[in-house]
Length: 348
Image (cartoon, rainbow, N blue to C red; front, side, top):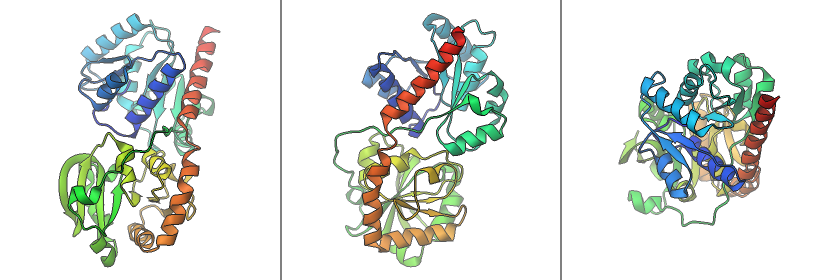
């Protein structure tokens, strides 16, 4: 179950997991709000889905519908993929009429109150990085109830890269950098402005920023830097393949699946050394890491990578090998191992 209305890394991972489970002969049912990108992708892939409005974690109508669905479907395992889904499933399973183990995926190094309230009733947490696992343990979850499952990157046939320069009307020689993470959402405009303000003057003249995620509003400027708000993109591979650099200025990211996707395509990353990012990026081997909150250092690292073609090529060449370690098959197998362990325990 996933309650998000947008299309981000978590929804991509859920789609990959559902498809991988079906390939293993297991029939998943994915529950999501109506008219979401995830629901559209599920229907396109022919995966079983159910949808109904979920206005809040205390939506009584949604709880009743969810209870009926659980009684009808009788799942061996129920899996919440975000905090609201966890709250709803926790409420729907109250009384445990349906004897199904409850699994909850956690993707951030911050543990929300909803998760803390339900932690005693969750049979297994899935942490997407060691940093997330450590945050859950620090919040009071015992280590034996946490499974470390890294996200997976699907192997696809090459696709034509998205031509951002032509699409945005930028000069042919401009450098195109994609920006991912929480700063691209509408509520972080000041932080994003502050970050770009610390770009060296020479860099601001020659770079174009593609903001991936958040509202899609087209061409704009950030402190004089040409920018384009692309919103949530469905064809992630094509979007990332059209970049020269990927910038990840997040502060509490559990891992950063966009970074792995970019690495697979040979697009080097500049990121703050926070959360689980260091579990992907090895500084000056396949990307550049900057001390947390050092916005001036972040701008300098972007400028360095923009100017040093040899370093950019070296980091790009090392990316695909690192990305192969985050394989979808491994992600699906790790989930299956956790599910089977819980089912065996529940039978005993």
